[in-house]
Image (cartoon, rainbow, N blue to C red; front, top):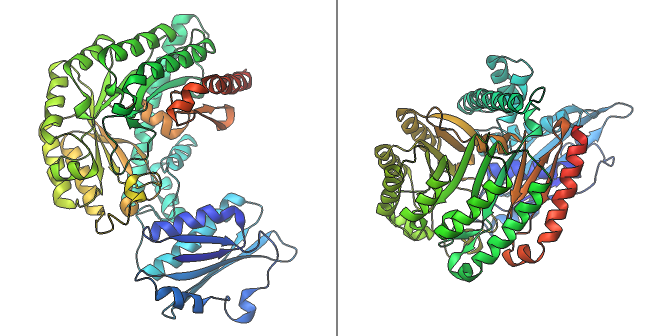
Length: 535
């Protein structure tokens, strides 16, 4: 247990996230003792009041490093200036303290200074650094992207990121390289919008934020993986109601399409879950209805997550081919059979190879494969084996995920049963996956992070030229509205000025089917507000 006492409630989340980044296996509790109220200068007493006795008691109950941390903001009388004091003490009697100043009229810079100070303190105490420094958000590329759009040079951005966020040289370079790649790909998308506008007789294209992409969720899987926290259910339990779910989904599609007459999506992504748990006739029905509701004439990318190899058949792939699907995913997560068996992936390594070969034989020329690094029991040798097998298969893109065990995952819910497991990730492993993709002629094109990631690393998409997933970039950079349909789907409405409004669908499948009118009405209200704002 790590206990933190803080007198600024508005920074609780940032403090909690950064402490957890240094100590991912520890429970962290952040208590707000006062919210911005004046407190006595702790330095006048020589040190911050520290609960060392409590630390000593708790240390006896835990083998992990444990400490108590107090953070105090003290406003200087008559000035918009505050001092930040921090002191850390542990049960072994070790004490560290640091202090800095911040300008109260700039909340963003106040937060940055707080996180810089906290990072230095935790780094000194733990004797380690983090690859992403004090960054705790999930979209690191937004920082270099914004600065590139302001005309900054790559070298200046790198210097800023290292000094402001303490990012490592390697991660700084990765973020900047991906931001540049994203800008290039988004420019191509904008030129496509310009062509579409000219064809329709419009005066010119709208900015990207005024377009939209379409997400459709199929919340069924062959089985539920041990680490999974997505909104999905075993298809065996819902097989008799899958058609009823589709009825509801198509109704939602009808209602949303009416709100955007004559305007087609830039990209379409069918995910889940595992969309290919649908039978061929059901998939055909879904894709036919999408074509009926939306103008796909200028859609740049249509992705279907085939996902689990044990859900793929020749008949299903034939349906996708018939409807002109441009991109599919066949996701092994690992090519080590022992790991697949343990995490609940009810398929074999050979089935993955067979499904991939079948898709190639049927003419699919843009196939992504997802991997997870940090799976239980897997270290560098197991990850390298997976990369070697994939190198021989030659997919068109590979997305490397660092395992993030979320609250809803069974691996977390039953952690006592699995406490002997190791979850290994390292710079060496991530560098090795990058080297294999580079040798395969791929480049990194999008990146995001999640809470509780193994090794505090990231997820990176690598692709051959022309095989990048545009939808992935659009949803990560949050520069375009994503209309999301289906149980558990989350719509993001992007307004002028980059304001974002989320409209959530309920996750429970039964509730989704019963409350669809309520959810379509929320989308109608949100889209009406967005359209009014863009006039």
